Image (cartoon, helix red, strand yellow):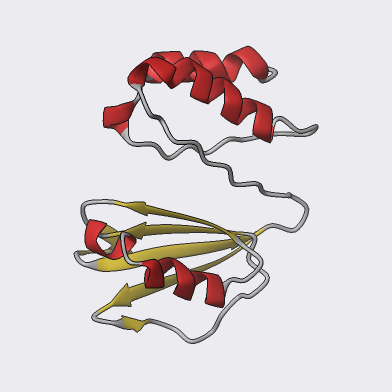
Length: 139
């Protein structure tokens, strides 16, 4: 596995070395920057072949620092592991089981090893969501 970290702060990206073969980019952003279309667009320009997961957080960790009003990214390239990003909108907390079930159906492929979930904690019943995932996926 190869990793690459970048930081966007004060309208500038750190490091100009780009791993354009990255498969997955995890990006943690201030709530103001995550709403700007240009944030996602610049990441897609850097990593055209990657699934990009861009989410907001309160304080972005980069190296040993915690920053505000920034975007902290980690780009991942795996030697022999495919990745797949899917998303669903949770319209009502009562849909938690159904959303978990639908997501599991979309990612359930042979050889699946791990699932990484980012979700708004205020909009979902986690127990129901996990029950929905488990109803579809093998143990």
